[in-house]
Length: 315
Ligand SMILES: [Zn+2]
Image (cartoon, rainbow, N blue to C red; front, side, top):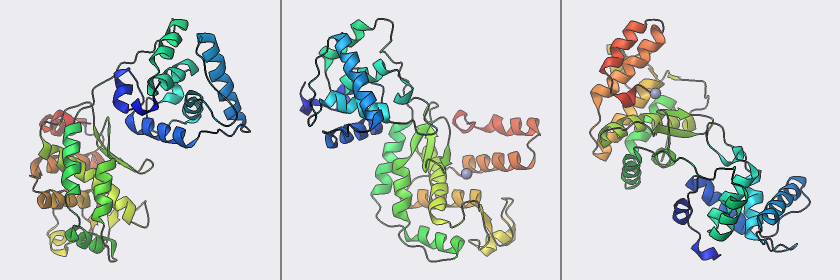
């Protein structure tokens, strides 16, 4: 087992199931945790578990007080991880043998892995992996936003709605783009502090993807900049002229609500990045949102709007 050969790609080839961020975090912690704190009851317990499993499968571990076998260290780390809220599949749901199996895959120890599988014929170590869609769009958007260092027009917009000077907020914005994750829906999650895009339904064009993801990213940008998280109305407004015209969007007089803010920002960012903002689709999505708020029981009305929406918007 060579430690230099460890890579996420090798791990995937061996059929691993843990996502890249969790994988990297566990490997990093393993490298920093050569000597485990053996006074912690949970750690003592995990070390016992892995030793028993290894002995049962005929896998030889080397372990002493000051230099733990990497397989022991990694097992203790994975066993101690707790599933983050909102993540459906996570290694804390796995049985001990499966976790040990992941450890051996992560370290490229195929001999031991085969021994483990043979000893446990009733446990499946194969996982069905579903393809995540729209990853290419995301990569392209991350690249595009990181080619721009600053975006003063966004700060100017922020200064108006938050009523105080905002500086360098593009750095927050582009970081939220980079950290966005594929889930079942478009959204911004305050608890996880992540924007999300659909990973199971294909978004046909990059322009459509950017129009909608940048809207969700804008919700995140508001989250990081506003003082009171419960507020979704910005009474200071952006453009009194537009509010006075009373565009049917739910703008309060002289103010603007967060949905409108996020569409405005998506449009601003698209224009700056040279992306064609999908005005009609954005408007349709906004109308659907407003309709939902005003007439949640009018199912026929909602259906009429849904008919016009592409599949990736009905999420
Ligand atoms: Zn929204």
